[in-house]
Amino acid sequence: AAKMKGGGDTGSFDVGLPNAVPGRVVTRFPPEPSGCLHVGHVKAALLNQHFAKMYDGKLLVRFDDTNPSKEKNEYVENINIDMAALGLEWGKTTYTSDYFPQMLDLGRRMIKAGLMYADDTPVEQMRDERMHGVESRHRNRPAAESLALFEAMVAGSEEGLRNCIRYKMDMQNGNKALRDPVTFRCNTTPHWRTGTQYKVYPTYDFACPFTDALEGVTHALRTSEYKDREEQYYRILKGQQSVWQGLPDVHIWDYSRLNFVNTVLSKRKLTWFVDTGRVDGWDDPRMPTVQGILRRGLRVEALREFILSQGASKNETWQEWDKIWTINKKIVDPVCGRHTGIEEEGAVVLALEGAPAAPESSEVPRHKKYPPAGTKSLVKLDRVLIDQADAAAISEGEEVTLMDWGNAVVTSITKDADGKVTAMAGKLHLAGDPKKTKLKLTWLADLGADLTPLQLLDFDYLISKKKVEEDDDFESLVTPVTKFETLALGDVNVRKLPKGETVQLERRGYYIVDQPWTEGGRAVLLAIPDGRTRAGP
Ligand code: ATP
Ligand code: MG
Ligand code: MG
Image (cartoon, rainbow, N blue to C red):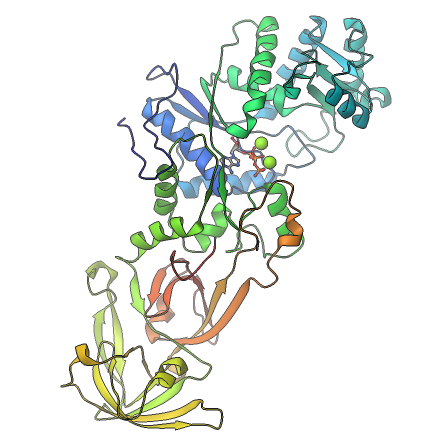
């Protein structure tokens, strides 16, 4: 496949993978089912897909389910939905838990070979010893003793549960990831897939090199904040290869983690927003999740284009949401239908002399430059509704343009004591030149119940701080109010719009239909950020 060039300033995907043999490359996307996919995962998924395609290789998806306390079947289902939405194409789906039996076997072999030992040093003390390069008192215990303890862990006995297994690596190494990492630990929480069958689980650090090698992954892509762990990965794999014949090598290839301003991208933190009811779910339009941003009106093509423009640079960057929404706007604007929405509060009736006394309807294009968008009916009447903000900007005697109709001269304006416009009258002046008017107004024939009641929702970032650092207390950075409602009236055509359709409400912006109109109800439309006036994931 041809190389793809990124358009961004941060790099491109022109770079290749080291030691890649066309037709033989295998990459993998390994989500942990502890939450739904977010925009950072999209980068991981698409990058893996990109390299698999570039070398006519294969992409695998592996659910990395080694921690039963965090994982749920529900997330597996949602991640499958997310990957389908992204159009990800992969070969096999596997689960790390598929390999638990082999990994227990592997554990036994490595303990027997003296590569790993059982340790019941309390967590705090272990952390402290690791910090100071102090060896555990159990480090040099006989292999038989460690093996017996491992079996006790497998059985889940009281003594077993007090222990973990550690890789005898290098307690003095400056790279602390090499200071005897834990490879197996007990957990009695039922596993979403294997239930209570196992009481002991491999750690991610131990499971990852083994499953990668076993599945024939040639290139394991990892975000560069794990750079420190690369050496650990290779050493663990080497130990595994020494007791497991034919286990191939794997190349680690690192790339930069994606960060967005005003956003947290950690499943733990996103879970908090869901669990505390600060959002309505993982698919809330304020969430930086795949489900959230697509619901908010981001096109998958825009997401792909954005990710590819990121390139394969290894430097961590903070991305502005504006950039992704600007790409989106360029995709949406040329094709989406145009409609009209007038704010209910303060809407003003303009009585129009010379206009039809009964509704007069005609079919007009929904997008003047894009016929496939179809047509809509445009209704003219001698009473039209306009926005209060527009009404307030007009002076008596002024000639204005009613969009898609023509000019009118406003002859009288009635205001209440607070200066709010309550009524207006004018005369159609179709001979007038629209190029010469200052105001081009959106308007709707005052059809009462035939208009479409709308709830327009706009949102703010969930996080008020621009760059959230690792040690920030993110809970204290939550934006107090993030949802804003405007009630409006839409043209009659809005009734027919299906869920997920993107439209432009003229002079207001882009919206996506979240809940279609139903008899007696309101259609719910979400404001789509456009990269300029509207923010948000
Ligand atoms: P989270 O903190 O959201 O739980 P994670 O890395 O623990 O992230 P995983 O499900 O293990 O979540 O991630 C699957 C893959 O996506 C991994 O390869 C991981 O490195 C990658 N990934 C996660 N977050 C990002 C990000 N912000 N940018 C790029 N890749 C990411
Ligand atoms: Mg992870
Ligand atoms: Mg994480």
